[in-house]
Image (tube, rainbow, N blue to C red; front, side, top):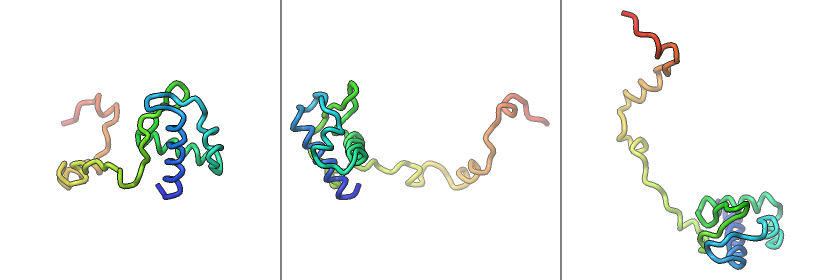
Length: 117
């Protein structure tokens, strides 16, 4: 998220938190709040809302949005998940990966037929 988008998202979050308490559903539409904040277009407001949903500050509820957390978001507050075993190279050998990549997936007919001898 670039700095301008971060500022818009946090300004939107601040506007929401000034209207409702944590756990309550927003009564105004995001477009109304975005206009009040001077967002350049509805798409900028939609991006801010999506970013806040992704960061668990808002959640969709009853055709509107519920405030989950009023704390502003910062890039330093990102929690990264640990790398998966595949990312670490621990899950499978290179041969197994190569073999899986070259094998054709089974088809319905090949699964029904028995192998010829």
